[in-house]
Amino acid sequence: MFEKRSLNWKMRAAFTVSAVSLAVVGYFSYQGLQHVNEKYEHVANINLPNVVLLEEMKGTSDKVMSLMIQSALVGNNEKEMKRLAGRFDETLKAYHELDDEYRKVEFVPGEQELYEKVDKTWQKLESDLKKGRELAQMQKAEDKHLFQEFYMSESVKGTRFEYYKVLGELVEFQKAESKKWVASAKESSAFAERTILTLGIIGFIFSIATGFIFSRAISSTLNRIAEVLAEGARDIASTSSQVAGSSETLSSAVSQQAAAVQETSVSVEELTAMVRKSSENCSTSANVSSQSHETVIQGKQAVEEMIRSVDDVSRGNEEIMASIEEGNRRIAEITSVINEIAAKTKVINDIVFQTKLLSFNASVEAARAGENGKGFAVVAEEVGNLAQMSGRSASEISAIVDESIRKVDSIVAENKTNVEKFVQSAKLKVQKSQTVASKCGTMFDLVVENTTKVNGLIEEIARASSEQSKGIEEITNAMGQIDVATNENSTVTHSVAKAAKDLSSRADVLKEMSSELYQTVHGKQAA
Image (cartoon, rainbow, N blue to C red; front, side):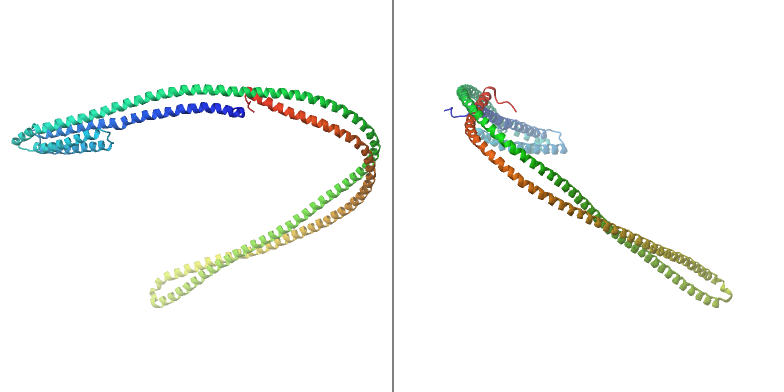
């Protein structure tokens, strides 16, 4: 069954069996641990918290009873009674919270009946405690005996003892449940250990048996490979004998070809002379072509220079435009200066108007005042101030006008100079472009002349080729004689090729078998 399978498959199957055995052992180990963990979690999350809650409920009930008794003590003032009453209510509330938390945990079989007894008894005890607190809170000394009689009554004592009894039974039930679950967890743990040990032994035995079976299959494969290698070696020896016989026949055919080669050599010499002449013409053509190529390169460079010159002209024009724009900007500055002159002129006009008005007022006041015209000194002083302002404004206007004239003259002169400079530069660049274009024309004339020479050389090469054709015909006749010997050689060559092919095929088989055997024995080496 395993003979048709590869060695790789056999090895993978053996390792798969071992891996499956380990997986089975691991699975049952995991399941056993899960069961043990679940049982211990039941103890930790249900039984133990329930026992703790029941103990806290017992302690809380004791505290409620203690607070009730403290309330009955003689000498408690009103403040102390209120404090004890508050703590009594808080403790009862804490008991109910513990009871609610206990009921949140799911009941196990047999637990609910015991809890209902505890709850029923507690409700009765709680009623007695509340009634006892009411009796304990009576302030009159003659009423204190009522609390003592109530507390020591058989009904109250019976309820109290019954509560502790059923609560203790519930606590013992929880402890018994804890012991039961712990015992179950230990039993599950022991069963898991036995199962793991048994499966481990079975897996070990099964892995050993599987390894033995597959090792026998691998040994069989190695033996078969060795037999194939031996048979291939015998076939190679036989094929080598055939190759030796074919080699002798091929040697005889080569001797016949030698005579035909001698006849061919004469024609080859004539053809060599023709080829030499063609080679010389080709060399000349190559030189001319090289010169033409250089000329074309120079023409290309000349064209590039012309293009750059044209670009320079374009940039010169752009510079002219920039200069003109600069002139426009400066003219705009002149416009701004003129606007400023207008503003100053307006100020002067206002001052003149006010001066006239003050003069008129001074005349009127002088006429009225008569001898008392001293008051008009103030008016005269104001007129003087206005006259001074007029003088300063006139000076500023004069300076601004002079500056404007200077700027305008400077701009005009500068624009004129720049325009002349740029125009002259453009003329020079245009002349340079014309010179470069003329140079291009000369270069391309040389290209035409060299092309004519190349055409003449090509015609000579064509005539030489015709002569070479005749020489080739003579070579063809000589090659006909060689062809006969070649046919004989072809037959021998086929035999040799077939034998070589057989040898190659056998060699490939041996190589594959050797490689497979080496990898089987030594393992696949890393690259």
